[in-house]
Image (cartoon, rainbow, N blue to C red; front, side, top):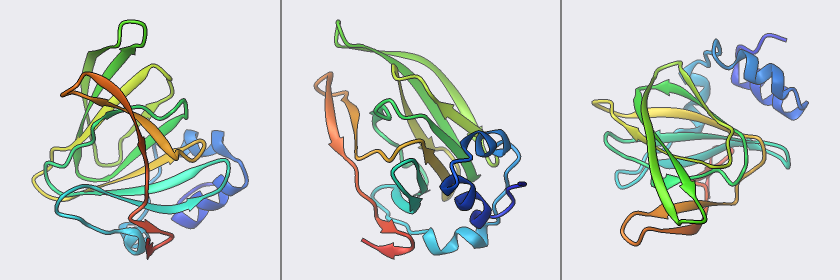
Length: 174
């Protein structure tokens, strides 16, 4: 099945067709109007808007104002892909050495509209930052819902656990 709409994407995910979704993700273009019900903005932080989820996956739309950025974080051993819907992002990758409690910068990549970035290594941490001149939107797929994640506190050089929440769930404010 060719995935060409948000409805097709959600159906494929619910049917467990993850390889098909990942294969098509690089060419996938979801019309912005289909995502409109899930878009919400906050001037102080990016928003997390859950489009669909079950015990096997979580599909979230993140909405970013100019300059908004994540903390250095992991995905708790869950595979993740990010599809940039609108805008440009800078992704910085890090590796965490648990024995030495040391977070080491690895590299920086730029990810632009319609490009995909994938995190599938449990030792990799990253940040995403909206480097566009305006708002940006990214679609995130996790291969299990993530209720909490490891966040590296740069002030204390400590790894902390952060409980995650949504701003909207299936288009409704939480």
